[in-house]
Image (tube, rainbow, N blue to C red):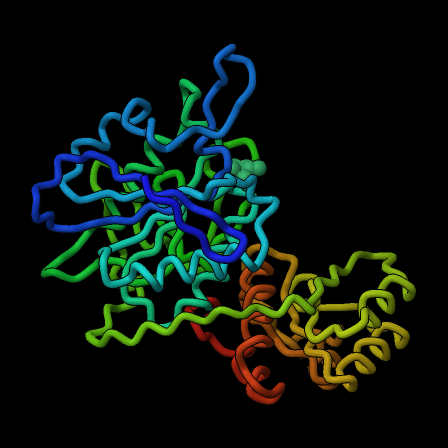
Length: 363
Ligand code: ASP
């Protein structure tokens, strides 16, 4: 076991014995960050504690039958994903950068609560990614009898290793859960009790697994013959979400918009991008835009798209310079703002990128 670290995130490295031959067809790196998937019952069988990945073969012996090489990088301090920060995203992106040429694919085991944020963030940080980076997790711990961890992990590994004519089938950041492979920046957590925890309402699944795994070639990002991966290592957290609700008051709106150093706001609107037409509200938004704060219109609906100007209640937003997020999710919008604000020099260029797709995050 080797110990490694990146800034405040410390890791250990574990090699898993698989049926891989000496010169394996593929090698996969698993990055284990924490979350429910890796929990087992303690010695008294009472409470759930994070499991040491060295015991993976005891829990999922099927893994030893894989014919590819498997190396696990485990965070020393396993985290509930409620504690994930942009520093973790940058640590993950850096780990992938450093190991990119040594592995055919990457599987990231992550808690489900913020998995859609992390998958979105990684999709932006890894520009021109040409290999699979598959997030997975579970609703029930690996130590539970009816766990979904086994199926989710095994299939995520299989997808990360899947190749045709020597090329990976998946060349993007994706999320595998409950028989579906979703584009990472299109997924959102919709369920905390059932096994189907994630949905992607505005983009079809990239693959579905039944007896076989069926890939949706029309939806997958195509393989690029050139190796031009660029890894970004900055995110700007001077952003906020302002979610509308009937009765929202001026003090709250102004408190959010007058936050010191605020640079961008995701405005969570109703339906196809609608907001109140009261003048105090529109004036506050306009004043923020005049102070160079980017306001990004994202719908509270899970399906469908923002269409500024369709109703009178969104026409003025358009006129005062609110940017349409189209059918982007809040998770993808928030992380996109963090990414663009940190890595693109001026607001004019950021605005152009916000309203179009940069990693397949909006239609
Ligand atoms: N709270 C856990 C987490 O997100 C839930 C899970 O893994 O499903 O880390």
